[in-house]
Image 1 (cartoon, helix red, strand yellow):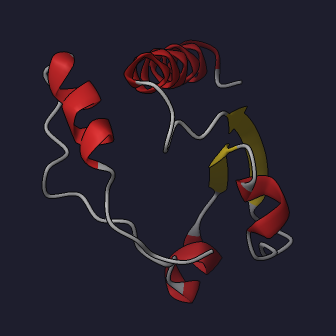
Image 2 (cartoon, rainbow, N blue to C red):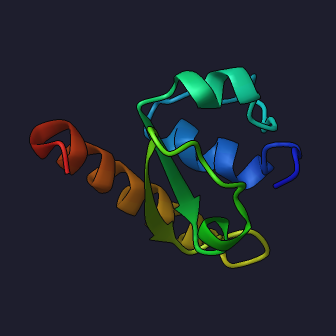
Length: 95
């Protein structure tokens, strides 16, 4: 995976739900952080196949979401809402 900037439409979509990600960055994961993690969650549809392997003790799950980059504005809103619902479910059930 490579680091890149945050898509301006992602910033706009999150602003619609009062979440400011203006100063967020896309970073390459640090090996020390990865080694101390309990859980790694990948999100984009292609991320599961291109993410580096995780240490055996790290639980890795893939929540596949469409990448809205280059698509209609409504796709950013749809994916934002799907991710929000998935995070809510995880916080309530641990799954």
